[in-house]
Length: 165
Image 1 (tube, rainbow, N blue to C red):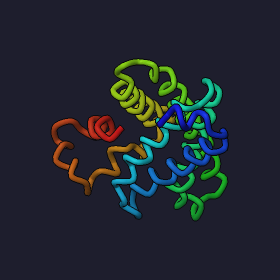
Image 2 (tube, helix red, strand yellow):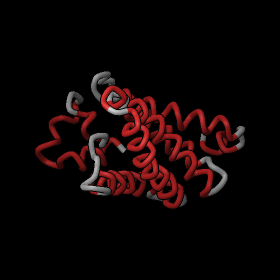
Image 3 (cartoon, rainbow, N blue to C red):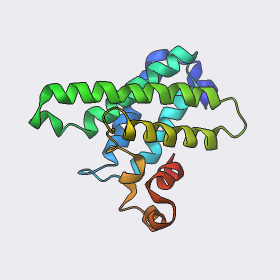
């Protein structure tokens, strides 16, 4: 599947990354379509692994982040439009890093586990930096009403994020 996607035009991978970001955002409140988080993570992984290099993977991660945070944080437009653009732009850079990391571990036999660990590491990073972070859009927060809700007391939000990723 990834090989077939890598032979398609780059625009298709960009659209896949953008739609994956939007799908992941729809997993959060107020939409609460939590199964879409799985599709969004899978779509980003497929797009990044099919990219034609690290630069393409970084760009696809950025596009995912813009779609994900652009919809997921759209409520900020009502408060302060400039802060919305700044926050979405800044936090999307973390997904650029995620695209690079997923691409880097993609050649490993254990890449799904490593990619999930990369996802949690990037979530940890944007939840703590800059200015004590902005961790509102962690995958684990979308799963509160899902069948994974039982796992929160055992593995926490990061563990649930890992399970989803």
